[in-house]
Image 1 (cartoon, rainbow over the protein chains, first blue to last red):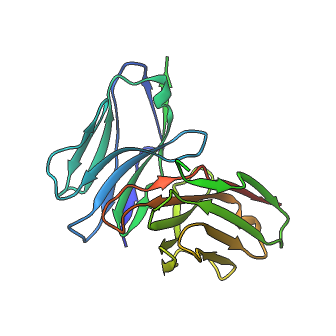
Image 2: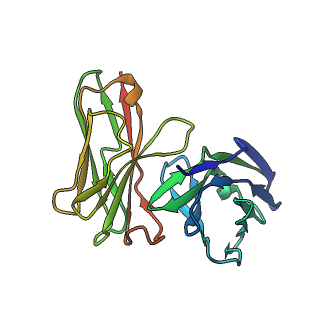
Image 3: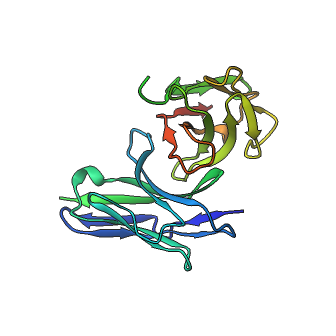
Length: 111
Length: 115
């Protein structure tokens, strides 16, 4: 079974600074997808960024980028120029038929 | 609608009561998922539909949990004889694909509290 591990239960960052959230996963599959979702207090899961495992190029979406290391099974999220609205719970997720989530990292942005 | 809609948003049930949670996916989305999210944890997979077919129900924690999607659109998650450990947020998600990597679009969830 696939597992996703987020080793940082909580992280904090100063507004306008950069923060990196860690994620590792375990799978025997070679073809899969990885996601980062953001969950604010409203509870809705919002897609932040998506990475296909067969692509070596790291995905980028405005201030959000990933460092995808397939051999190491690592998928970290970098948030640049952090904004107050980035404060939320962030979940790393693995998709191969079903979506498996990590435990989440609570991000606080300090003004 | 524009997004995935879930109702009710909050549900309080006394232990032993039956509850029904509704999910309206994005129109035309083939895949529909139910997840259970305990407080402070990541969502856990419950079940998956492709159109009206329930292809995977391996995540349902007990036979008290039952899900259906009879016409391939709206889905209902039913919990019989609720227990306190059933208290959680129940998230529904839909996707236009079938395991092809299409992102899941989530609803706001139903927070179930069993007293």
